[in-house]
Image (cartoon, rainbow over all chains, first blue to last red; front, side):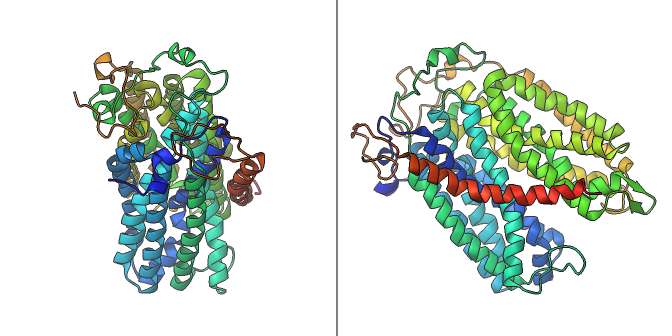
Length: 471
Length: 52
C-alpha cells in the first residue's frame, strides 16, 4: 500500500547534523494523545446514565479499543516499518481523531453502536498504529540507549491518562455547569457534555499528533551517534547485530517466550489496577466501614498512576545498564515476593499495602516500556516495530484474562468490591503469583536467536524490501 | 540555516543541517506543559491518600 509522497520514508531521512533529541518529543506527542485510552473511566458513569445502559455495556467500548490495539499493531506492524514513522503517525492520528468524531456523533444521537464503532474499532486501530509508530525509529536514533528511548515514549502513554483524566473533568464541568465531579453533591455529566468533550479531544489530539508526524525523522543508513561503537553492544549477552524479519521472528521460541513474559507481567498488573480503589478500602475494612475513605482511595489510584508512568521511564532506562533479561527477572521475581507480601501482610498496615502495590505497578509499566528494547536485542532493528506489534497481542490477551481472573475470584465472594475484606482478594493474588512464576521461568529460558533465522549480512532495509524471505 | 526538522529532505540530499535549539526547546515545551499539568493534578489527587 503506497503512501502519499509527503508521508514517504525517503522524505524524512535526516541529514548529517540533525539533532536526535527532536525525536522523543515527536514520539511523546503521539503517545500522550493515545494514552487517553486509560482515562475512559472518568466519563463511564455519564455514558451509563446517558444511554440508560449497564456498566458492562459501556465498559465494552474500552475492551474493543484494547483488542483493536493489539490486532492493528500486529496486522500493520510491517506496514509501519516499511513506510516509516511519519506515515504511521499521520494514519494513527486520522483513525484516532475519526474515532472521537464518530463517538461524539454516537453520543449526541444516542446510538451506542456508533460509539463502539467510533471509539472502539476506528479509534482502536489508531491506538495500535500510534503505539508502535515511534518505537523502531527511537531505537534506531538511540542505539546506545534503546531502553531510555522507548521508556520516554511509552512513559507518554501513561502520561496521556494523567492528562486526560483531570482535563476531562474540567472540560465536562465547562460544558455542563451543573456537573459536580467530586465531594458533596457529586453527580454525573450530561451526555451532551461528553459529546462535546470528544469533539474537543478530536481537535486537540489532531494538532498534537500532526505535530509529531511532521517533526519526526529517520536516521540515514549507517548513521550512529558520535562516540558510539556498535561492537560494544554486541559484547553484551543476548544482544545481536544481525537482523531477523517479523515473519521469521514469530517462528522462534524467543518470540513466544517474550509473549508469555509480557502476558504474565501485564495480567498481574491488571490484577491490582482493575480494582484499585475498592481494593484498598476492602483491605482495611472493619465491620461495615473501611479505615480508608473514598477520597483516600482515589488518592491511591493517583499514586498507582504516578508509579505506572515513572516505572516506564526509570526501569526501562535502568535496563540499558543491567540488561533486559535481568530487569525482567526483577519485574517477575521481585513481583512474586511483593504479591506474596500483599496477600499475607497487605492488610496489616496501609503503608505496606501502598508501597508494595505501587512498586508492583511500576514493574507493570516497566514491562511495557522495556519489551521493545528486549526485542531489539534479540532480533535486531530490521523489523523491530513489526515484531513489537505482533507481541502486543499479549497485551490484548492480558486485557481479557486479567479482569476475568480478578472478577471471577471476587464473584465467588459474597458481596461486591467495596463491600469485601482482604481475604476475598487472596485467591486472585495467589493466582497472580503463579502467573508471575510462569513468566519468570519463560524469561529464564530466553537464549540468543539461532543463526538460521538471521537475514543475510547485506539484508536490505525495510524501506527497500517489502517482504523478507520466509524460511 | 536550513533544518531538516522543518522540511522534508529527499534521501539523496546529504547536505549537512543544523537543528535550531529553539525548535528543540519548543517541541519539548509543547509536550512537557500538558505532561506537567497532568502530573500536578495527579499529585494533588494522590496527596489525599496521605492527608488523613
